[in-house]
Length: 255
Image (cartoon, rainbow, N blue to C red; front, top):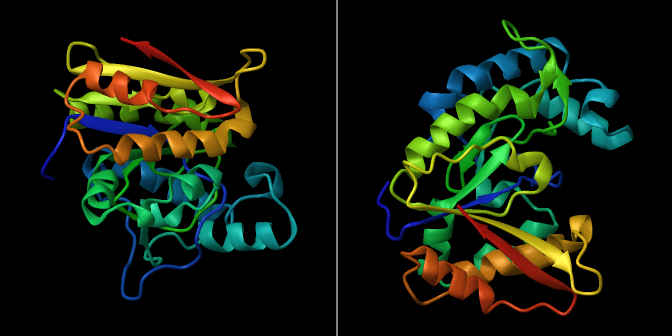
């Protein structure tokens, strides 16, 4: 994968996902940039979900027609049709990021430099094939040869290794929520820089939480729509500082 600039952005998935996928595409755990590093762990989860008929309402956190869809998708992951990750996720962050309305050059760069941290996939590049599924990072599932644990604990070691390897020599901008952020432990000896980004309310300085999702999407769009090369921590911080929102302000921490 050609690296045009020195920035990767970590984003969460969304519960909202586009259904189905492109004809003649068939997903497998070994696909994509992280397939070799994370494929065995993905396969273990796929096997467990298949045995559990997609997962219970308690595990998946949904009911009714949403549960039916989730169970159907989760129980038939292997060989299911795919969309690239940036088209699969349709939640608030992704809607306000609105990648299709960027210029072709900006859109192409964003797809290759967004990394989604996912309960099912561990990590997936924005341009990687992604199935329809439902599995939260806080879900607890019995996976063969592993103790029952949350997906965040299950993924911490392999995702940390895979991300540090991919991003070695580059800058990581972490826009993950707290329940996802602990999965990746940045290796400062490998990375060119690591910037964690949070949104807090202007009124009282409290964490923005769910209400800040739209602003988070707009902020990431702001990063990817810059005409300048974001090849240094200083340039990225300057770009972030030029973002404004009526309700939220951006707090950054550099490691």
